[in-house]
Length: 195
Length: 123
Ligand SMILES: [Mg+2]
Image (cartoon, rainbow over all chains, first blue to last red; front, side, top):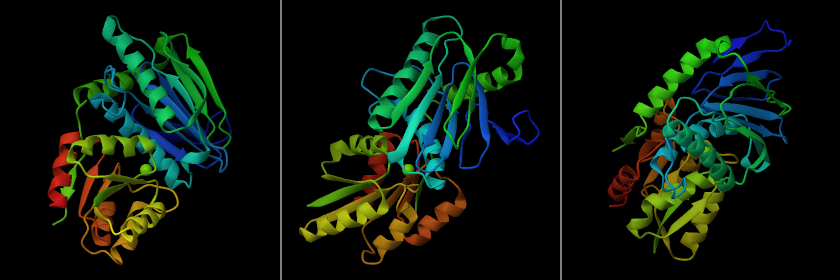
């Protein structure tokens, strides 16, 4: 993530890279660009706190639902990082709503479509289990998206990118992140026993 | 009867842990934050039942996991408490240990690892 003070918006702009998550109550803007990854914007209207997470579920999900699915565990952990940041800012799950973007289909072959479909299904199941209302979603398709989100107001703005070369640096980072996630799709966290 | 108490603000995580531990045969109790858990544990003990293990998240509204462990340890020095969190900073892990945690698992977890750790702690 990078932070920029001098920009055309007149407030601090945080640019999130693939794999990043961030939550704040500051009067600022969060922005990112996504192709295949999903971008989740969360807003707590009761406390004027917002956050954004940029991640991917590394592969297609099985049909048993996210609780029984090993790939979904990676997505749940990504959401946990974002929700943990929201809680640290003083937010509670009860007053949240979500806006969902991304999961575009890129590359040829069935796996690209299956990954996009799996990511979309993951998000729907996750937010339904969490009982968090999804107030807006724009998912799938063969489009890259640039997203702005104001964490205080919860207002988001999405632009379809016409020229892929405009954001070639971002696309390179996204591809690196996606490759890393696919290679480490069974990655688990550390286990420490204190005795 | 001894319960396993799962304390996490995320219903998805609570259900995932319950799913992983299904085969162990323990009755499962749930709470969505530390304060909710203390009340439910008191109710379980009040009925003459007990808690075999607490599995607790760190970042939760109302009462976080580290505070919960400190409170729980005031009158229970022995029941194991396993922390399950995305937090992996050494400082946080040390705080958990000092509060009285028995172990620390960083999310995501594999179901087999969870079962192994739980079996070892409840022994
Ligand atoms: Mg939590």
